[in-house]
Image 1 (tube, rainbow, N blue to C red):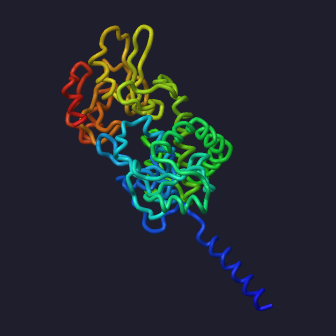
Image 2 (cartoon, rainbow, N blue to C red):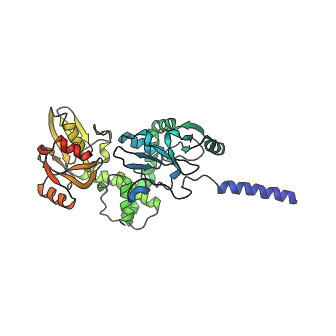
Image 3 (cartoon, helix red, strand yellow):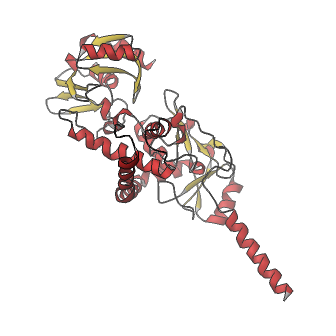
Length: 363
């Protein structure tokens, strides 16, 4: 009898221990967050809490040395479509030690029993073959290198985005709308934020809503950034219209994500859209022939205006999607007011913008 009880107790101990040590994507200790500013806690692509999904987290460095951190390799893949990212700069969290390691040397276990982050197929990285094998033994899956894991992430983007969109449309957007209408400042302007993590930071740290749990904060931010922002834009007459497949020919970013900065050059049979006046001017200097009109977005009204009649503030402390910008206004008085409020150092007419002036903005 005693022997039977001991066996039962031993089995219970084994099962209890395994449940206690079930794999979690959250950081075991203090996570390393590489982004600057109060928005560093969240992924700039999807807004997810990096601390909660730390063990699938990846980081990158943009050409302007700005560091970004993502909740997953899926969001890294999305960002690589919009930004020129040096693959050698990419790091990933070692799921065994919580340390950041070079992604190119990491060993990935894919398609394990652990649920994927923003994707159907999980992809977790390890610094050693031994750690990867141990995880593989406990959780299944198979082992690949970083290049293969990234290729898989790119190949599944379409279906992963469809899966996430379905969930957001059915559950998260309605939840976000309900919370926003009940608990938030109705004057929140989502067009004022370039990326969703900046909006989440403002909601939380500037107390634009009543105190919210992380899932509530995410729902509100997604509703504002992905639904209300575009719904409100459609109500404004005379805005620059951009389709979701239009990319800036200079930087490759999807322009529709940045309606506040949209600009266009029209020719007789085609047009090009840009994510800011700076990139528009870079294109303009080498493609002047045959232009029929040039449109930019007035900073205050958000309406499309004739670029050749606009006034542009240079060197302010307001940044566009690509950093320092030429910020357009239809009214010179408004340009002067903005310049004084935001430390601009000069105001130029369209004809006064030179290639040298544009080049300086990137320096």
